[in-house]
Length: 167
Image 1: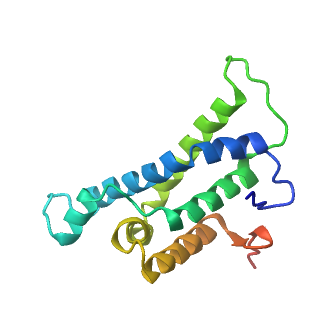
Image 2: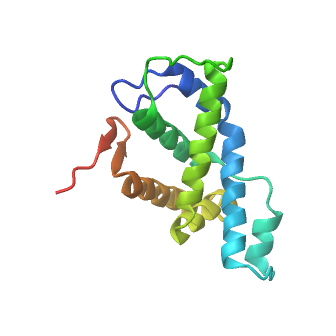
């Protein structure tokens, strides 16, 4: 089911490119977060139960992160998309260009977000520690609040993306 995040959310080629990459990028998000968490909070490589769980888990619960991904994809279309196709002179297909641009933007965002301990913790709770628990939904809420604060937007279920008004 297609969800429109703003009135002119009609760049279907970009949305299709984002949805084709969804599964692989969701796993990539968790891998990036795991690597950054382990480098930052366990530089000596000491092992306890939680670190072993992070290292040994390869099958992630991506249900809550899927919604987070959809919202980031919607925000990317809101901020950086145009309904007009640009001319490509390098012989690439628009689908390939959109996939490459979206992958790079998402990766940069995740690295930027990972500067926050709260973001790292929320992703790990959602994907690894509490995959089928209420805690996972609470972690998703924290992720949603994090992107609202970071981008100064609010994403409503029925209204879509609304910029926050700062007094």
